[in-house]
Each structure stands twice: as structure tokens, then as C-alpha cells.
Length: 367
Image (cartoon, rainbow, N blue to C red; front, side, top):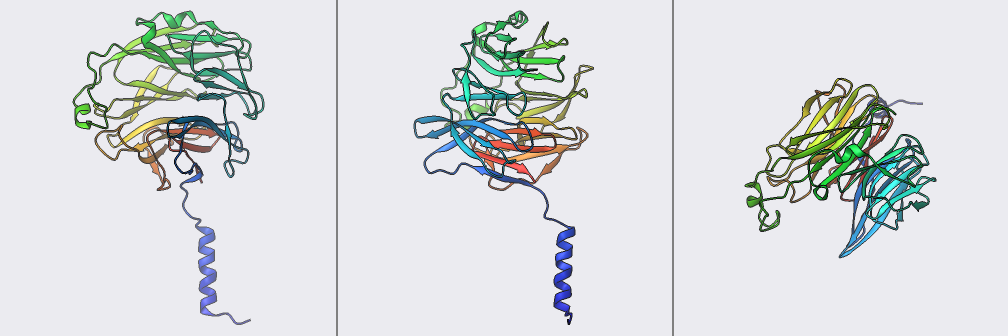
């Protein structure tokens, strides 16, 4: 068989392509694209590299419908299902057992979201729950309350330390829970003082006016346990911005996130938390980017957020941005599909597999 120059060149091109595959980027796996409606994701969780679920609300004019999308094959296919109550947050203990906080209470699934059962009424409205096993868990709640359960969420009792910090209960809320291991955990929250100034117009109508008003300090709360929640120690400090994320890893590392108002110099600030020593270090802040979620995998740390299109940060969506670091100091921006825009971005991972969900109905995976 005669070999031509063209056939040799073709073989060389194919060989080069095999040795140099296309560069990786955050690729769209799911996008809600229905006319006259939109899907805003509230939370996302992956319990294994193949099984994931995202919850949110479909907005259709003045109507709001609760919904979830579920995958059983790592995001290759997603099934859209309806929920009975508007969701707030998710927590899964393993690949079947999980809890969903809604605007009206708490639900439990034993079949990875195939069927949800509402649990009895709780003493306070939960924002987020965390369980260390199928029976023992905690709920961060409104009205300056943290609740504990020892029967999987059927009965709850107040954690007394949550009420100790100063501040009126009706303006205080606990919003986040994270455990590094079965013994060490933290719950964070805040007290919002009475505002002495109220904007005459919404931010989008008068953006320049919004920038002239400075964010006021408030009390930030933290509850810490070293014995699996048997006892909690309360802490409080005056703080600018809101603690919106705390992720802890068993090896002693963690990530924390503070988000600020439009008038503050930086949109957000990410911290490295060395929870065994109590040392915190700023690792990322940039005027151009608003980070809205952080995550730790066994080999890397991730920051996800948006690049702001203008000076007023809360007015319109921006391009989705994801940064990765293996040493908490050098952050590499990862390529993201150009169609991904949002005002808030969520992260989820199982092992080294990582996903991003946006409040614009999109889910992406790094591949």
C-alpha cells in the first residue's frame, strides 16, 4: 500500500491529538431553559461521584414552584422533579440518607430524594442542619436558636449556649454548621442591629446612592464543640460583613468566607482556617470578584463566585469564576463555559470530582 505525504500528515495530526487532549474547563451539564420561567438553585449536594441533587425554585411570573434536579450518572443526565415546599438547604449523611430544610420545616429522605417525608414541627425555623450519624444532629435556626436532635430529627431540644451572646433574638440568626470530624464542630451566626438609615430607593434604581452608605458592624456569633456536641462554648465579636461559609477538613485545614455590602472595598474575603491552632489567614480578596462559596477536596481548595460587570455589585449577574489552589496561596483561575453567568454560585464535590451550580439554573462540572 502506497504511503503519501498527506496520509503521513494525517496520522501525525491524529497522534498529536491523542497525546494532547483538549484542555479541561467547567462544562455545562444541566441548564434550565424554559420560556418565560427561570430556575434558581438554593443548594447542591453530591453524595458520590455518580449521585447528585440540586434544589431550588422555578419562577414563572408571580408564581414560584419548588423543584429538584437529580442525577444518578455523575451529571450526564438530570431529572427535574417537583417538591412540596420551597427548599432552603440540603444535608446528606451518605448516598441514601439526607435531610432538606424548607421554608416551612424539615424533610427526610431514605432513598436519595426519591421520596421525602416531613418531620414534626421544630421549635424554631431551621436554616441548615448537620448530622454526624443517622440520629445525632444540629439545626442552625432563626430567633437566636441552635437545636439538637438524638433521634434523626423527630424531636429537638435547644442548645443553651446559643442564647448566651448579646443581641435581641428577633434580630439574631444562626446560618451555618460545619464539623471537621465527629468531635470538632462550629456553628456561626449573626445579630443584625436596627438600621438607623433606610434607603429611599432600591439599589438597582439608584446605584450611586447605595455606594455612599457604609456597612455598619454587627455581632458575629460562633458556637464551638470539641466533644461531639455534648457541650458548646459561645463566642461573639463585632464584625463587618457576614460569615457565609465555613468548610472544615479532618487534617486541620479549613476555609471561611465573609461577604460584604456594595459599599465595602472588597466584595468578599476568603480565609484559611487552621482549626487545631485557631489561626486564621486571609488567602483571597479582589475587588473584581465576589466569592460566594468555598470548598476543600483531599487535594485542593476551590473558590467560586462571579466577576462583577459594574461598580455596584448586587445589581446584575456577572461571569462565573472558579479558582483552585493546592497551597492556599497561589490561586489559578479555571476556564468556565462562556454562557455561565450568575449572581451567586454554589460548590459541591465528591472526592476529587467537583460541580458548580448557579442561581441562573445551570450546573457545571470540571472535565
